[in-house]
Picture (cartoon, rainbow, N blue to C red):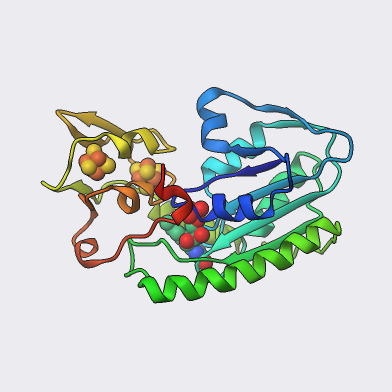
Length: 247
Ligand SMILES: Cc1cc2nc3c(=O)[nH]c(=O)nc-3n(C[C@H](O)[C@H](O)[C@H](O)COP(=O)(O)O)c2cc1C
Ligand code: SF4
Ligand code: SF4
């Protein structure tokens, strides 16, 4: 069973790549909405977690979910952090939160995929995305072999975790979101927000919570690029992994 969270599709892509035949993929955003917190593994079934890196750490939303779930029959457990450059302390944080529940993270890896951080800088162009995706596929193939062989590794890091958490908490604010006249009033952003931080009012999205996961789904996945964050995002590219484009 593989648990994943995704804003722009990379982690779903990675989880789908690593999945073995008939292995369940659990979207933690759906699980939270439906209140599904209890899971049972089959005899010898592996347990996986595939999450995006935010400010070199894990989102509070993911940590809260991990603290709430109960999983029976845990044996081999792996974690894969998708990231735009490096997972920093995110994997160590995953190991620590699972450890608090008595789950030993047997194996941890990172996979560099296209960076979706449109809030702070421009995103890759199509050629750069193609190259990154090819390298990501190579890394994922190596990780797939490692977890099939039930490889283990020591989880290192975590010293800078308090600093990364401070950084994440200073960035996960919604104040700078705004919507332009390009809005089609489709409600997609509100439906897909994992934080339920967007409400439609008079056909337009309103950010009704002061903080959110900051997953970037709304701004990257709006069909008309109507969502902006501050002033600088108007000229920046948007990114969605093709695995989500049909959704
Ligand atoms: C708010 C925010 C912070 C991020 N911080 C990091 C980071 O510290 N290091 C990194 O390598 N990538 C960072 N990223 C990039 C994402 O981790 C990366 O693009 C990830 O693959 C996105 O996964 P998803 O498509 O499943 O949402 C950040 C993205 C966002 C939106
Ligand atoms: S997804 Fe974009 S077009 Fe649709 S309601 Fe939200 S802002 Fe408007
Ligand atoms: S408001 Fe946007 S960035 Fe924040 S959690 Fe919702 S979809 Fe993600």
